[in-house]
Length: 398
Image 1: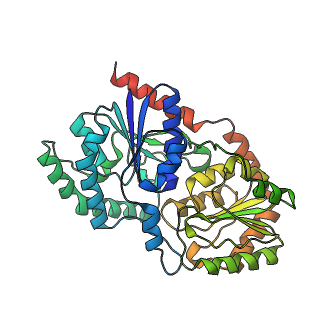
Image 2: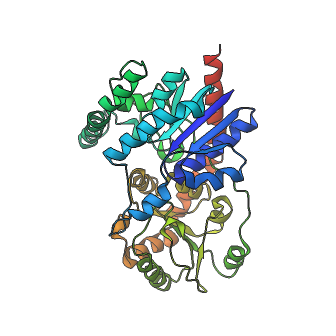
């Protein structure tokens, strides 16, 4: 049995699907993972078949970092059409012979390819917001989602149907419904962000799929951890940052103001490496080894980082850039895992100092973080997702 995984997104989309690919391979499935080219080195480390496909998001984000520290969110209309056309034209040869296609991110053309090849298609998400709203949601939220869905149809529906007509396929009535497919796999933790009843599309919620690290902590990090009290981790993931030297100044100021030590991820922001006795700049770290040794984390609100921090039983403060990160901040505050914060574009030394002091001094945050961690020990998102996919195979081959 062959499973093709098509990802059009950032590193946060790739890592959990790589974890899934590794798990499926262990269970005897043939797997191919198609993702943006900057992920090739990572995927090859895990001996997973890889095809570079789609834009290089790392380079695009570097080029398009906003002047106020924001980040590129969704592709433009032109980019959406270009990538959809690319998927429809090139993927048939790449995934031919597959028994199941899993799509992640902006893959508006992948369901059409699956229809052409008569292969079952499933969409995988890591945050519930893509499933739409329910009747219990505020009217504004429902109107906003409806507007987004309508705009997607306005821009992409005739474009996709023109391609389907050329391929001899019937037209689609709704782009968002076509994108989501028959039954979405919501691979995120119910304990952190449960999908609400009554959302717009069918789904099964499994749990977040953590990618195991192949390496231990670097000696420099081990030594830093042992040299003083537990530090704070600061990292903004795949999000780019304009004027990185500004943030180095903020971090130094906040370290002195809070009397806290920092481990700071350079990430895609290319932060200058200016280490001191109280600040250590690092490249990629194995979160499952690092986070349990920390006092708290400050980050952009990525779903994978949130899942790792929750399992480590530490408070967390989120300064979101875009998309699901804003919803994840709401969940952190709602669950009592950390303070309410401003958006990243408004980040200041004062705002960062306040958030860190709250994380370190608020015993309720620590208590709630421990309780969530205990609940998450009882779950395994990877096993649940693999089980769901295997049941899908049995049903299709019965």
